[in-house]
Length: 299
Image (cartoon, rainbow, N blue to C red):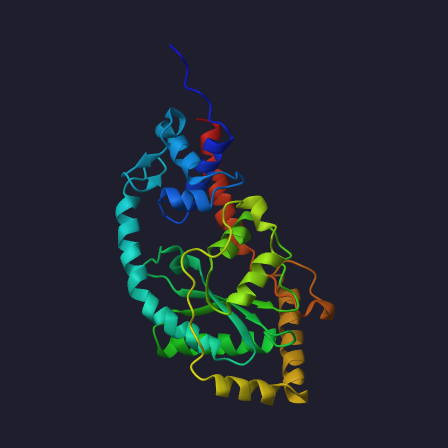
């Protein structure tokens, strides 16, 4: 009797992609596997052909549309339920995005996290990545965190602008599969030109996800509620008071991060434009993904 053939590079990459999404309880479609395929540049047809082959047929399950790891077929119903939850959250998310776009010195707003993936859980929140003008990131971050705290206490607690970049420091210092996924999966809602600049400054993501060029889905445009007020706020803050506020907040947060070691990286006054990303979540997610890949190695 002939022993089963080992998986080739493309098949292993497909399994890896499905395994990564399994961490989020998220079975994937063929277009999603192709876009977020780990490390292999190919066509959607190549992915579909590989999925029909014996090696992956033994290692994945499907409902005809989605693919999941063995023993995880219950996630097909979870995917359908979360898709509906995502659909219901989008009107609120668009309102949040327009509000964020109205803030002074905000040049890009992008949806990230579970809602961007269409995988919004019952206890989820609405995550955003913001890009600000140079020299304004820390005060913008402080304002957004204050608003998020108010929403948590007085509203539904879904408002979560949690990643901030400065136009002066668009390339991410940390380069990982997790960060590549976040950048390639984010949906630009305001500032399409800045979105393109962010992707160009982080072209290294193609090393991890070579098929994930451009934004996922159609471009959306969540314009500020009041561009006049936005410009007025920028004029008021574009002076000594605004610079002093930025310097104070940067020093305060950088000191706190250094004291607690909650963020990786050397935090000094010279790195004030660069806002590192939290490492705890990345480490947990990548560890869970590697554990699933280790199960493949002993199969």
